[in-house]
Length: 453
Image (cartoon, rainbow, N blue to C red):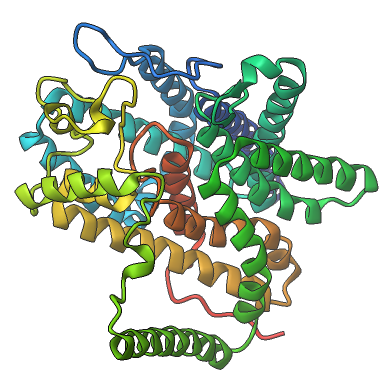
């Protein structure tokens, strides 16, 4: 009698827990979709021009952005409370990120514009809470992938409908922007959609599902081309070519992986040595092919940022306290450079690593690189384990793990020409946090061991 009552009590508790987990997963899915759509659309749809305050010369920022993040954080709070038993383990796993955030907070004390720096750091904390809530609520890889794919499908259909129905409003002089604020934002969104939805096709079990998601991938490719976003387009094309090669290498034995890395280093070193030798014999400048390459005039911005880094190499200007701050003290606005003029406002270095260096110093950049490389290494380890496993429960995660393992590398490449690390305003800034937290939660506490097939 007592044993039967205990079993019934246990069964009821398990059933209640399953129902609660199902509702938390649905809530986390909706929160993730809403957050991604807000990041992609923003508070000012179809606003293709940067608004400048004529009194200050600074950019006009919508207050809706801040309030939206507070609202989304409020929606994340119930998930955090429900999963509070897992918070201690989460914080232990995220110790490098917490160390980085501590340094960010320290730099706000000497920031050029302390109120702005502290406000943006608080928004970064809000985004981290949202990421943690979504990752804790969505532990099933297929559910996580489904939520990401749904958000991508929605934005692709919106942009496609905008392009067809409102071509004059959607088009700008430099490329298609659709509902986004800039053609580069559309390109970034479509690059994201490509690498979320292409693997998602392989999760479909019906022809109807395969056709729909195939259409989404094709439509995203068309929108990407129409955006004329060279950075996103080139990275997407290169990644589509390299992804199968990377998957084959990761699937092979450890010796094959080490051999591939060693071969790549040897080829690069040999090519560099041959090039330097030829230039020496002919008396040519080894850098002559890139002397006049400006990367769409980015080199002017880089030169200016490097000069500012030299002024504060260790401390930096303070977290997020270099661009779009008080116009009276913003360094670029104290010059007559072309990118500081009202008709061509610039709010980033167009290099994420330079932006981290100029704002948080060499210490901030070093900790950031440690955090990012650790996340990328763990993501690739999880992907390798899935590729080499014969366990069906692990293999079914493979489409999502391809995205989780490889997309951070694309973001790392993207940041050589654009800035999206921890800037609180872009999709990639959020996704780096989101994928990093998810990787840390999925990674075993010990070393990842693959199971040979």
